[in-house]
Image (cartoon, rainbow, N blue to C red; front, side):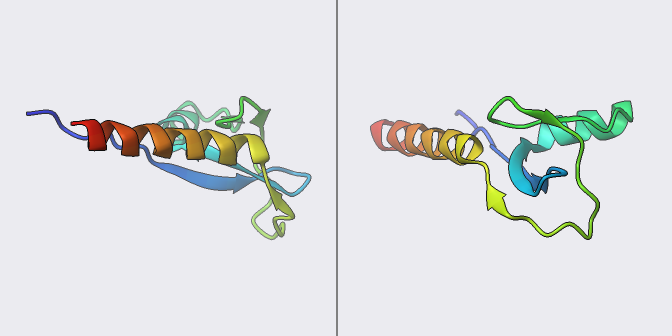
Length: 80
């Protein structure tokens, strides 16, 4: 029996106000390493903005990566 691969992510705002998606795994590694620099799904590397920063936009590259992952995951389950 196969177990479903869990794809978890959260949106983190960069200093210029763009929200990037970061996987739960990368977030945990960054916190553990105490480096403070995240790698987004789009490939961007950034330090998070202050918590009081209001997000301006969501990264299109990150959003596109999430859409592709969801489409593949949905197609895979339908084929099974």
